Image (cartoon, rainbow, N blue to C red; front, side):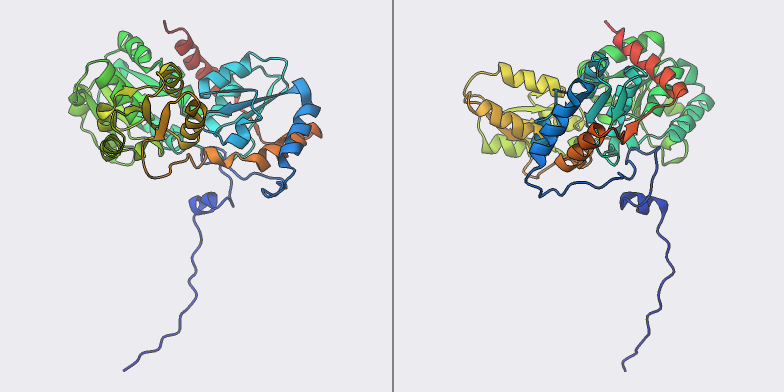
Length: 395
């Protein structure tokens, strides 16, 4: 017997998160970003390069364009300086004559630039939806709740927060307010050494892998000295005793790009390319870092390849835009540079900054229309800047 039913329409309302991910809702407190208003040029417009050049020339010294290493080549072409997030924020602060700082990166980077630049300068992000999944993994509310858990366990007074540069302004402000410091992937060891001079424990935010790798690989701690705080579990999924016994309280966050690399990736590339040097970013998992030959920040990776002898072979575990750019750059020097994984791995949010968004931004500014300005409120800025200044004071 065949039963025929009549489907009834479901009264299902999309959640705010679903609307946000579809680009149809706004949430300024999220690193996922918000809507990008304005009429963007078509990506197929053959005149995009000429339009970008013309708008930049019209703006002259009024604009200073920062390009993060993970940006597309079409964007990097128009950058006045390139670098990692902290280097670019410092470069912006050192250019006080520029009225507009156009940051081709992601939201937390533009926030840091706004914190470090003068009130007269305006920081602009070409696409407000260019957020950071790692920074999203630690919200101000979650971190405040974590501090309450540490307080109840009797360890907050002896815990110093250390937050990775890849965090929101709110998290940087929390860090500054509670006596902590910011770190980059280049100076994480120095930041931890400083923190352990101030207290007995460290709350490391938001990247668990950088915290674990620095503590174990660089400072000689054991994996048992580290516990993982999960903000989605009651009390972070930890007992008071575990918190009291730990030296490193690692936040359960990670980079969606670097977290994809595996030991299988390392073994596979060694089998395919005899004599290859495996060089990975410290945001990779601990077992990947342990299996690699060299570990270091984006700047370290670039300098290592610059110093490498001709004929050497390198497999790089970091974002694909940068690896491809390095492969093209060093091919002329007879250095073979390949991506560590067979799977293509772009930073999806970083790739939101494309040539149409950059052209729209520059043309809008050239016409006197300020768009997509990133502003950090004064109270947040003051505490975040305090944490950044502690980092700058590190030896």
